[in-house]
Length: 147
Image (tube, rainbow, N blue to C red; front, top):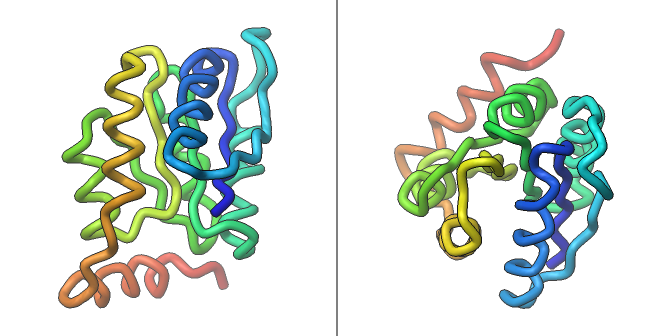
């Protein structure tokens, strides 16, 4: 599986660590930017990954900025995207298990390499539970569909 990933300048260092984690886990990476710590606007990069997931080009994607919030807010504006901000493995597990999160957002300024590895691994290895959660996820899309 190929995982698209993007960050802003504040998430650049964490993105580089996350790419290594993904490759260590056997995934291919599509790096959609950025390529340095030069200041950029995070929405420009969040939409690249969010649109690719929304359009079905990739089943999942990862976004990283300083707090993770800006990327998450932006990604969740894109139809069919369920972006989740995760700062520990239990949160990422629940996002996958209960919300079928297809975009993982990380707070790059606040995570160590070990934490990044644990969070990504947990998210990727946890299947969507379905059942009672399936109707809830359907309601997310039904209630937020653009006219």
